Image (spheres, rainbow, N blue to C red):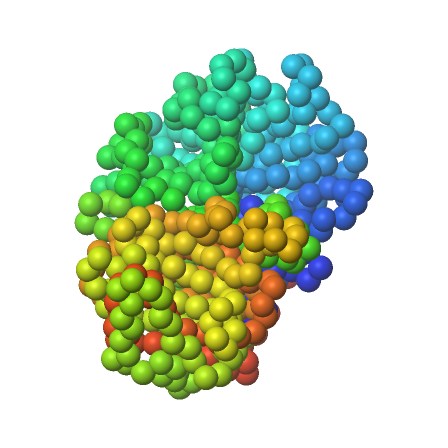
Length: 493
């Protein structure tokens, strides 16, 4: 992996990201997952970036409290800056050896402050508090703190669960309020849809005339969703397409700069670095940018800074413009003559004929196109899906091949695919893949089993015309290291 525009620490993985923007810099605190057994306690680490492409690791930010501490695991939270210049970190403290009064594994909201520009943090154990009445003790996490200017108080949103009701629908975003960031009082729930097991990593922000509520669904699906409202107090509208990405991009939280809204999440790894492996918790940090449409709904795409790491001077027309594929009751494809590099940006613009069943691009395909990865647009179903062939086989017979599933499970995104021209952009960096349709719909995943192969386009039961198919590559020498002297937080004041 090139690491430009993505980030993963040496010998470890990025868990939930806690982004904070200040003076043009993004301070990206994250849960540092080593996957050691036995567990050695979860700390926060921090990376800093100005350009959303090059990330400077500053090391451990908030350490594990130790095996006996309530915060053996320092889990997700948020950062705020008080008027006196003090930074406040609110985070989840958890120790698997400790249980609440209801016998469930205990989670607590904890507090730390920094007076030296987030270089060091002082814990405040007297400010620790657990679930208030009516909530389970095991789900009291991910505190998100923000200032409510209208009410002149601080609000804290908390991932919580009701103590009663159907187990799969107890999720609620609880709320506490404070005047001084030290003493917190219970308040009515911020959002109580009685839907999902839990709403992880909640946040709210205002953008123009709209408020947005973002959360990660911890239920039968694992994905980050958003809601929108004209008021901080709701009601919250469900947009037609309410997800930010698919299954592989999780726990996304955002920060703003210069009128832009950037979302920082992680692309999950798979067990055994295998395409058929189970999704794992934590992975590689990735950045998506949101665009606000006139109706307030959001479109998502990779940040332009990532796109610009692929050199235009390296662009080449891989498939000639004007190439047409016509297969009214069959299948046709066309492939490049050479394998793609390990890192590239592909732009494919396809004119899709009315009534077409499916079309899209092939990645790391065999010379005959029979094997490889597939990003498939299905106009009749209004979706983008990720697929691969061959699939897992448990034996030699046809019924022992996993060939009766329509696409890779959990890798599906709804999108508008009417007849006409559409663009599929694909950024591949090693085993990372981020695909975008029409600069609005993103699907991220991993590509493990096939490290190389050709690129192509295809159509099934329909017709397409290729209006653009170009591949940009990276100049490995263009990486610009951070200037430590320019980093305000590189040294202790």
